[in-house]
Length: 142
Image 1 (cartoon, rainbow, N blue to C red):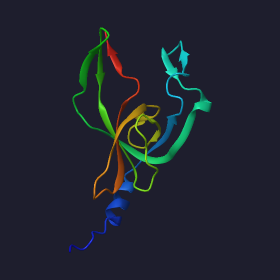
Image 2 (cartoon, rainbow, N blue to C red; image 1 turned 120 degrees about the vertical axis):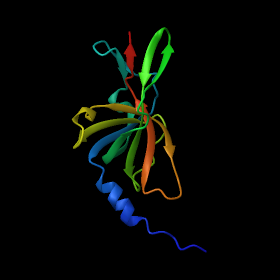
Image 3 (cartoon, rainbow, N blue to C red; image 1 turned 60 degrees about the vertical axis):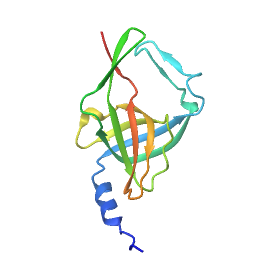
């Protein structure tokens, strides 16, 4: 029988690299009660409609260097997949949760970015919690 690996030093190293801060919520009622914002053209859930999941350190990683492009309803959208890394002992993040980056030591352009969780990634040698996500506001090409 193999001796179990001590992953705590690696886990600490990975968590020390988490120089971003994020805030994660879920929309308990879905999109049915979202409020239209005529300035941005987007919809926002009412404040009473969100459940808090996590707030704290994290880091964002771009998954695909070349964004994917798709045509929907006559408009071409460009999307990039991202990974969010959280401390291993942080709460499990559900699919469709909203992630907002509230601070970043290495990339100020991330602050305020909003992402939707696409899936969770689990493995036997995990030293953090990894979540796949996509940008909430995808860029539309005219």
